Image (cartoon, rainbow, N blue to C red; front, side, top):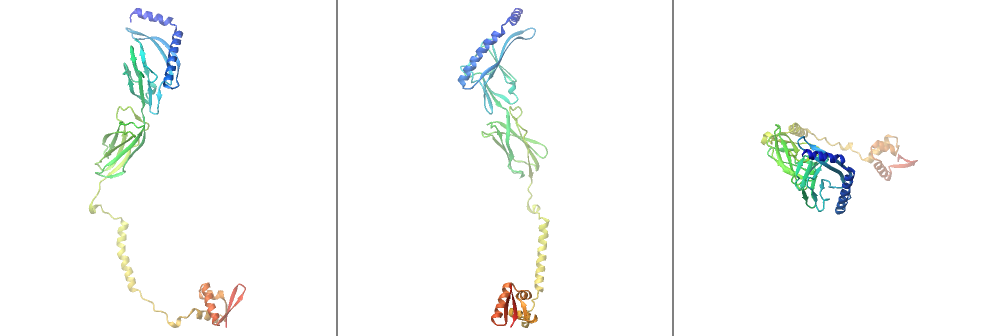
Length: 354
């Protein structure tokens, strides 16, 4: 820029009717927003209009800038996982020479990353895309798609907690939202602390899996990571899995009995021998002589004679040890034979010899 240009722009800055300029800009934008709302069927409006006129650059080269800013509510389409910009530009968009379109998405950078942009920007910065005019955008452009970078680990597990050396173990899991083709790293750390990194792709349903054949016995740890430079990150660090690898023993060396079982096997022959010895020594008791064997009826008669010939039925039951029903049955038989008689007294019977 020449000194004359600088002076002209300085004079413009001092005399510019910023109120009129901003009002004209507001009318143009509001008309554009109404048209976009009608074509997309989405409610939207513009607010926070601002106009700034300034110069920027160094001592040797300066640039005069007229900067319009406003907030477009409803400008983007937001889903659970994405934010899309571009459908408001029905019929395209035109940048005149010396005009610049700059989209700043620094406020989204922590939770979203730019997945797609069309057309290619004239310049791309960390959280900005910039186009310089003269440029004629196609219908629906400029278009930008931002994708949510936060992933949730809904499952992370292994097929076993303990495996034999030489066997395989399956490590699997699921992330949400599903990102088909996304590469995740499964890191196996052996008992010596050395790591083996294996990569696997996420399927359409969000699931991933990997098979590994650990070759060292001991405790292993498994970690889930994203490759360096990934646009995604986990909402929470996944907890590592732990499994152990053992070496199978063979033959008699691996056959061990519990001490209690050994003691049981030793005691069995001893107990059997003692039982046989007792059986051999057992002697049968001779049956009692016939003169000592009397009938139930004779027993009752003897008890009555020894008691003066008269007792209550309850006393006879207690003396013989018979049950109540057996006592009644024996007494009824003796009464039929005319050897006793039963006299009812209150609630009980008195039995007398005849």
